[in-house]
Image 1 (cartoon, one colour):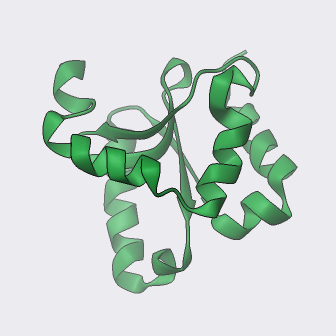
Image 2 (cartoon, helix red, strand yellow):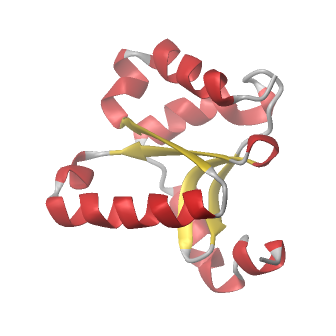
Length: 121
């Protein structure tokens, strides 16, 4: 699939901008750890669109997606949507990691270590 076709579709630009400018506190906290190649020198992008989905964080060199889940993700309908979304992304050979928002605050080093485990050495 042509990467121009799946990444940052123009139609999703307003939503991506909105999400970047209205981050959750958990997204802001994790972004402070990921931005400016702070984590093992890996570049991360936030609110990157892939296909028709917008992912919270994306590391191109690792084909890694990091998603933070708040309370709505506990809803059975949302859980099914997340499963469908993750399956689509994994079929495109992306690795998807999901963390509950509370872990970013309560266990941030564990979250960062789980992300590091995915990095190709």
